[in-house]
Image (cartoon, rainbow, N blue to C red; front, top):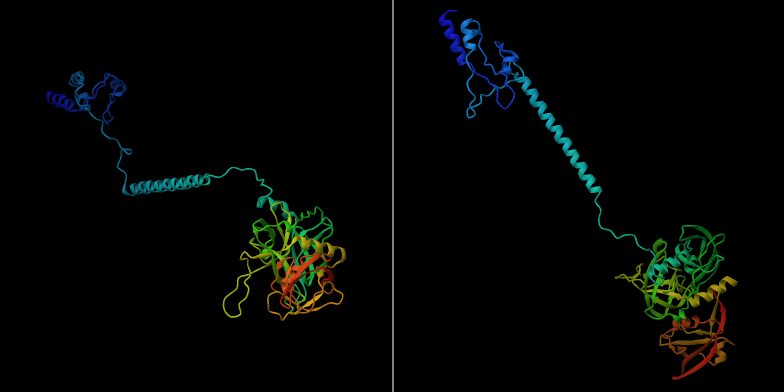
Length: 452
């Protein structure tokens, strides 16, 4: 090699990058190139790269190889290795870049969908785990004199009646209650009047056919009987003479066929004279009741059900309601409770039920007179008297106006009948009457007549 060639080789070696090892770390290996022949040993010892031209120059190359490496300067700039690419041949083409971008977008969308679904699941799980504050389970027993306690005691003895009949016959739904372990059930006459088939449903849901034992139109009471029913729960009977205005009461029935409905209220009045029925026009179907008035809601279907006192004893048989009148020409009664319900006193119901069970019919107390229904004054005027009857024996005459019964004022014929029928045949009775403008008092003993 000539001197000029050696000089060129030396200059080339001076201009080539120099690599060294860090004193506190592993040796740095120069990047591989087409002319690299240094090998691992040279990298390990920090030998600078020598260009191929210098190696081929013989002695000049040896002199170049012996050139010492520059000293380590801790404040100097550390040379950076050139960036490397995956493909050393050529950069990725445009279609490949588009494929990579599309793949990245797809992965991002998939990740977003998975994340959203996971969020929905987390929200649903959180919502299903949501628990609102609630009272803990507690003792379900109620005081015996509470509405709930009275209902629990009485409901097993209350029944719902479903009746069907021929053309023009009574039908529909009513209520009754068990009288004894023999299967006798007391209800209203208008519930079963004309019925050809009667079915009784108990609070347990058991339904059986019932037989009509007897009924009385004047008292609006009837008795039916079921056979083969076990576990009957007769209701205890109270005493309607002990009832006072303001006493709490509970009514049980099937208003509008809603069985086992319980309502509550108070006794609004006692001795309220009411008449019901009269659809036939001849008076044969009119009932006369010296009723207990209550504001406990009573509706169609409650008829025949019990009115109970605070000790779950029957004090009345729910029988009638007063409905609100619709305005306009030909005003009609509107169905539904307005707080004016009426019950037959249980003392009267007990006597009638006992007679029906024994004989199939009830008796009515009478004084032995016919009333003048054309009289419009205060009281009830006697039209005629029966020969040998209680009125004749007491000295009552035609034209006398009866104004009081046992000291209680009467204002018309219906009230007189109601006050008399509130007693039993054979009971003593005191009547106050007017004759020729003078008031007098008479005593008599009530007679008996068969009911219808």
